[in-house]
Amino acid sequence: LHLSEVVKSYNGSVFSFGAQDILFESKKPFTGETTPEQFIDLGVKYTIVGHSERRFLGENNEMIANKVRAALDNDIMPILCVGEIKRDESGQYLRFVEQQLVESLDKIKKKDLSKILKLLNQEKNYNML
Image (cartoon, rainbow, N blue to C red):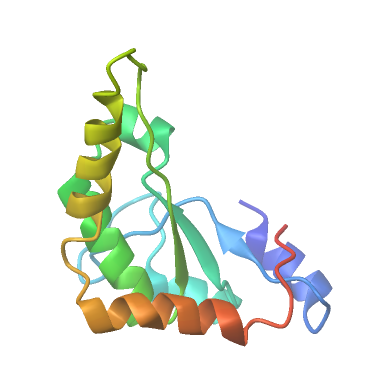
């Protein structure tokens, strides 16, 4: 809610800023959602995608893959969240996490995985507010 003011206040400092979510469709109006273009205008460099709270609200791996793609297309570093709901002794929960990873990165070409690392390596610091 106050991200623009915080970014303005710390512009040029050692901080980099991230957002809690990102919209993958920027051509349609979505009340209460923020597009990659809006984040670029603010100077946001990171965004969280796939957080358990968003998954609980109905976001699926395909939607998350679209968000990862939208972030990368706009030079915003996606922070992909994956995780199990419940662990079991047989380790099947690892399959669940694997499925989240595979499907959430489905729209990412192999060459674009290095783009994520490139963006990370270009940052002079990793402080996030």
